[in-house]
Image (cartoon, rainbow, N blue to C red; front, side, top):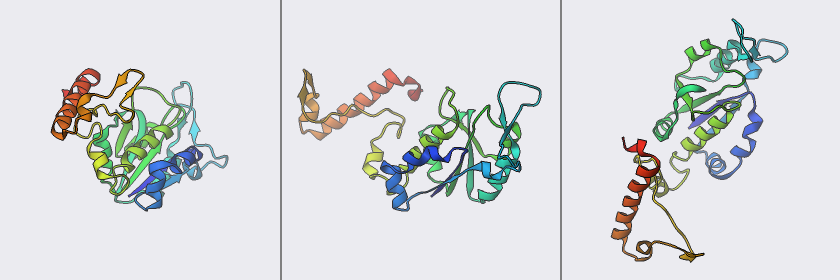
Length: 220
């Protein structure tokens, strides 16, 4: 799979791309992550990519030309272009699974006061990662790249994916490791019993109770 991130600040991704699962997936050739600075596509000699808003208003908007030209250069017939914007639908695990099936995912990071509205005519999906405001689309892009990459075959063990939160609409069950007791806090006896049928039943019960308590919206 190839992921192309269109950003004005590619250096923000340095540490993200060189650590942990993302690093290993890149080294194995599971995912090819490309950073493209769309400032390189501006027609203005001073490298400007934003401008004042028609009709007035605070801040500056990203101009059409650099983004249109950049997409013309990197997009193929197999590309899915995702604009990261506060007014997009919320990214979730279902989106991550869908994106993991895409041959070429392009993530467009906004900045400043956002995008000229005409840029929305050349994207396929508009996404947000939550109801809060960030400085730009780089952090959401990292979140999406991480969520998608770990779903690609070979990135992590299949059994790890099967038991994760949200994969079947429920949160994950509580987990414990050694020591079995610490500062008066004990591991539930059922997990020490060796009875895997009882353990599985307990875990399923805990998942349902945890989801009811913390994310009842997932059960609707």
